Each structure stands twice: as C-alpha cells, then as structure tokens.
Image 1 (cartoon, protein in one colour):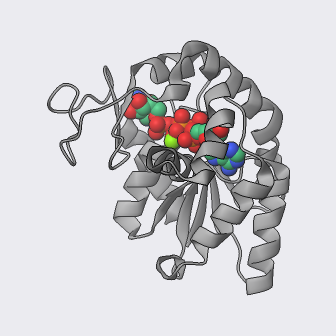
Image 2 (spheres, helix red, strand yellow):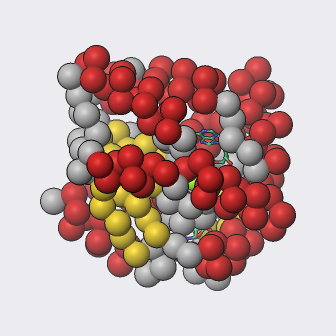
Length: 213
Ligand code: AP5
Ligand code: MG
C-alpha cells in the first residue's frame, strides 16, 4: 500500500503518518525529517537544504526527488510506504509517477488533511519536536508526559528552526502556491481522500483508517 499525506505545514501529516506506519507496518518517509537529520549530522545535503528550510522556501526539486527515489528503492519499501511532505510540487509528483509507472506500480491513496490557515499558526507555536527520534508534541494539545522530554526516547525536546511565526507565514504561502495544486492532480487520478484535520488526533486517525479499509 502506497500512501501520500497532503496538507498544509502543521496540518498533522507527520502525527498521522506515524500512527498509520505503526498500525499498518509501513515505513514513514518524511522528506522534512530526512533533511533535518542531514542538517544535524552536518552532511553536504543538510548544508544545502538548511538555507532553503530556514527561509520557509522549498528545497529544489532535483535534489529532493533524487533523495526520495533513492529512499523508496530500499528493501523496507517493497510492501509500500507512507510519504509525508513529498511530493510538494507538480514536478515532484510527475517524477514520482514516472518512476512508479516504470515499475508497474501506483499510489493507492492521497490523503489530504485539511486545516484552515488560522489554526496552523497556533499549532506551530506550540509544537515541540524530538531531535533524536522525530516524535512531535504540542504544549497544549499533545503534551509529553514530562515537560520538555520525549516520551519515546528521553531526549530533550526542541523548537524547530522554521517554526518562527514569520517563517510559518512564508511556508503557508509557499504551500498555497506550489503544493495545493497537487489536490487536483491526485483528484484526477481518483485516489484523493479528504479528512477534517481540525478534529482530535484520534478522530482524524479514525477517519483515515476508514479510508484505508
Ligand atoms: P516538513 O518537515 O515536511 O514540514 P511541513 O510540511 O511544513 O509540515 P510540518 O512537519 O510542519 O507539519 P505536519 O503536517 O507534519 O504537522 P505535525 O504532525 O508536526 O518540511 C520542512 C521543510 O523542509 C519545508 O519547508 C521545505 O523547506 C523542506 N522540504 C520538505 N519536503 C520537501 C519537498 N518535498 N520539497 C522541497 N522541500 C521540502 O503537527 C503540527 C503540530 O500540531 C504539532 O505540535 C502536533 O503535535 C499538533 N497536532 C497535530 N495534529 C493535531 C490535532 N489533530 N489537533 C491538535 N494538534 C495537533
Ligand atoms: Mg511533519
């Protein structure tokens, strides 16, 4: 089963992708997480990506597509995967499509998690993330058991560099310009499903499970 998570920054793609990954035993592939891991490790890819990410801009398609296609060619992706944050532009979607067509495969579900812009800024300002295992929390909505500490691995939680309010605004406008057109793209392929992302995490997950049945 191959699933794409669509939605604005902060819509809850990562939160839901993690739950789907656990329930269905599929790898959760977040291009944002891969870039952040490379930044932390100081790789060349990380250095290149950081300049774009800190401004709230997209990393160039060529680099992102190469990285993603390499990741999905790995053995753990044979039974499928959940893509979170990819594709984000029409050229990225076309590149993925071309590769899947070559392999005789296709995307089964594109799940759009809908959240209005007004809710997004509040979600981002309260987000705390684990720099080690990438688990995500929210100070008010999904607090960790112990303040400032990851439930999963005990690492100290951090604020993401791109969660400053000005950068969030920029990411939202980039989303509307470059990523929202993908809703139409997958609609035309008859794989698009929309869920109301303003509900509780568990209710959003329930709606997604109903779709994946
Ligand atoms: P990326 O890491 O993908 O960030 P994003 O798309 O902006 O999305 P976020 O991770 O911010 O939000 P999310 O939807 O995962 O929400 P979350 O579950 O955390 O990308 C970062 C950057 O990398 C990009 O700006 C770009 O520069 C670059 N990049 C990545 N992919 C790229 C690509 N394909 N091409 C080019 N560049 C690329 O939830 C948000 C908060 O809300 C959390 O605090 C969470 O706890 C809380 N929350 C979640 N669900 C709920 C709920 N139902 N109710 C209340 N709170 C909730
Ligand atoms: Mg995310």
